[in-house]
Amino acid sequence: MAKSHYPRSFAHPRYWPTWLAIGAMHVAARLPWRLKMAVGSGIGRLVWRLARRRRHITATNIALCFPEKSAEAQRRLVKETFIANGIGLVETATGWCGNAEAMRHRAVFLGQENMARAQARGKGVLIIGIHFSTLDLGGALHSLFFPADVVYRPHDNPLFERFMTRARRRIFGATIDRHDLRGVVRRIKAGHAVWYSPDQDFGREASVFAPFFGQQAATVRLTAKIARMTGAPVVPLMFHRNPDNATYTLEALPAFEDFPSGDEVDDAARINAFIEQAIRKHPEQYLWLHRRFKTRPEGEAGVY
Image (cartoon, rainbow, N blue to C red; front, side):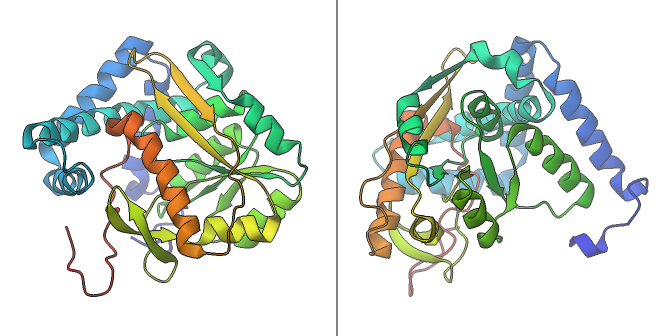
């Protein structure tokens, strides 16, 4: 439903499920940590059983990207992905509704010198993030060490959009619509770090095809374009939940050298190679539920 079709008053019954979801997120953010993980795991297991379409998409992605795994290992990774992303829901609630400072003891940030070195150039920084289940909590933890703005996709539901934007503004310096290229460039040129996640399929017109897990994947051109327009260093950022389900590791890698190169496909391939490297560390925490390969090279049949 488009935004224009939603009622103007947030008291309208159409919004009652949204209010319930917002209330549930506030409750989830305040649960004891072990209970929080258990609830998230339970949500993931339930969705894995019920969401046949998403399970098919996830299984297709994993089969394409991990052909070396046995059928049983692929099925296990599908289930683990749903569990990790279920936990990601309560992690998002924690990031949006909780107190980041109270979680400082849960975060280890490696490679801080790489981020500091990039900032010292004085041209702002473009941070390359990834759609892991830990995305919004990772942003909250990152803010404890380095402030950043974030590029995001606005939500169609106006009430949830207001809630989400207000929550993210507590975490990030500014929230920038993904279509607002001028806003991104303006913030970077003003010396800000901007967190941008270029790992989703935004269609043929916005993309070039570049390798990703052995597949030709539609990869956005915008990363290289922003770097070219601003002269900002591009810093790859990894972040994941540790196996103890209680702590998190963030790692800033050295800024890309000679980026952009002027070759759109080569630049996209470098971005994808980093994203693949990060995913392989904890593949279950990636958002495989997204139709990453929905846009196919000319003449190739759809995979979903």
